[in-house]
Image 1 (cartoon, one colour):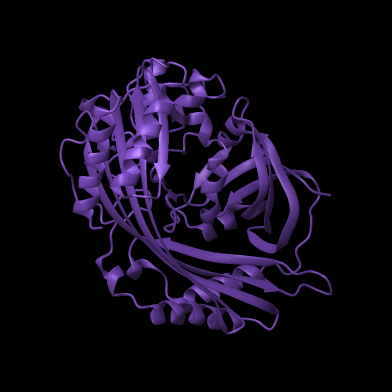
Image 2: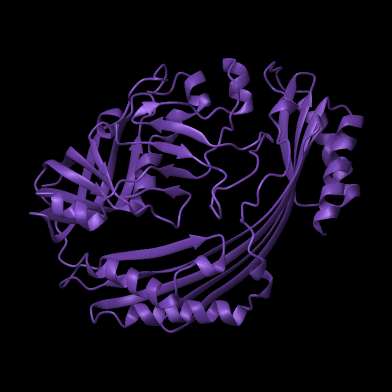
Length: 440
């Protein structure tokens, strides 16, 4: 089925629902091909290829709403599927806020090319995929005699979607994603077996780092964990490595949503326009970022994607407002999902910020963790490196940080000039002061 046929089928399913009891309908058809390679002990461990087709339909009938999906896209099967979906919807409770978005929020035109689809994808052969995974492993193994094992990966994905709403929206998207990396385990004394990884993900194959670099970086991350130990509990400066900043900020992500605000489950409720973080923190959600992993023209409601300033100089500028909870709150929707979160950077590198730390911890990874969106309190395990006198001293593990999100964000004193390029969260390294760590 080509894209034109998918769009035709989506329109047919929408019209069928409207003729058989739905007041409004939204239909999405999704096609994805994914290939993944795993390499271990200098041989191919696993090769997977999968193709998925699905149709999702949202039914709005008699002030009621439900969502349904199927992988059987034959029209004779879809007739029964839609009939049952409409019938089931009418058993649900009424909800006056359930409705398609106002068409005024839909995209007015196609807009600029976001470059999220690599045309080179269709020329990739499996032999090349396997070769890259093997080269990553080989590069990693050569880095140290302390290495016990290496598992390397390569994967690519091609996705096509189309979406139609019964009040006028029609959209199509095609995108690719490539990923590669390795996990390395090393020997640390008689019993220690620390491991670490490096993984890169991009929209275009040419933007992926080379196999040799990926292997070296993964091995280096594991080797630097040798000799890791706990520190005494106390307050330390904390330098978050650029690749883990997104995970840390994600602890508080739900609190920024209109759903959390409406349900009184956000510590940011009523804080719009207030300073909730350090003045050095500016965060922009940018769905128009060229080749961005989160770039898109519209959200799941069909609402046009636009840049949103989330935090500016530490001041909360907006929440993430989807169509449904926007209606409940009486707010204008702005797209309820994050896309590419971009932090405004500083003028110093990570090494320059390390040199400024007299005693602190460079956090290179998180373990577990939880947060309370109502209060902003959080606790999460960390691994990293002790910094003393502006130099990295030794590896650190089995420690936790805990505190309150708003308090910690106000302790941010500097951001680096090194935004992490292989994620939809483009965070540079971030330096905080006076963070509570628990250890020995």
